[in-house]
Amino acid sequence: MGHTTPTSVLRSRVDRARAVMADRGIDTLLVSVGSDLPYLVGYEAMPLERLTMLVVPRDGDATLVIPRLEAPRVVEQPGVFGLRPWNETDDPVAIVASLVPRPSVAAVGDTMWARFLVDLLGHWPSSATRYVRSVEVMGELRTRKDAAEVAALRAAG
Image (tube, rainbow, N blue to C red):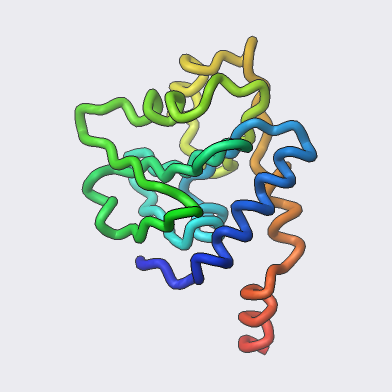
């Protein structure tokens, strides 16, 4: 599925997510399969056993970690997110962990496969990182509609 949401809308959403993260003391946001990923980057990940994850540090560039075979389906959005394709011999969770320093607080998507979270705990142990649900960030964003969402609701009505 290609990207259809304008870059300016996606940039605004990621910026709003970072503002909520700053307000709540969240260092990084990790979203995988589910509705939050297309909301933030315009790409709906295939629900595969391979990791696709958007890493949004509070400060720094957002990166979509994606299997190399899936990468051609994604339109990179400079200023919103970059792509980090991974190969079959790579450890995608180690790639995710390498993209940000060990966070004090990480917001994790509800629909992330548990095995990826368990693997992530090996890089960011719960003794050093507190894990919260991504709804701490995304809930506020999703309840306040942006201009693109308001237009879509009007068109649907």
